Length: 156
Image (cartoon, helix red, strand yellow):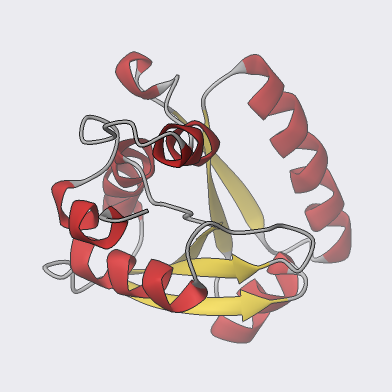
């Protein structure tokens, strides 16, 4: 069984995340979409809300399991039996950052491969950071997030 991990903060999940995951799904038997807990980041949404959002977005996707984890991502991969890590690339700077992390991860756990999926041009400007900024100023994020996420963002 081929297992992959798609890690992220998903604060909130965007249409770009969904696109990357849908394009990666045919490559694997099972994909864990996992919220990484990072004490150095101040999240807009609680971990519980992010998990609920992900479950709602992927409610009809039996190959996807939603989880959370803390610590090294490659260690979590190993604990769930994942041999691949899915990462989305929007820009050249994303590639440089992700390449460095992938190389370090490979040094720590050589059997875990990073798979880079380049975003479609229409999604390359969408990031959770930008969506959070729009939300902070009461802007409309409907075009950037899946419809299932909108109820979770009301009142922010």
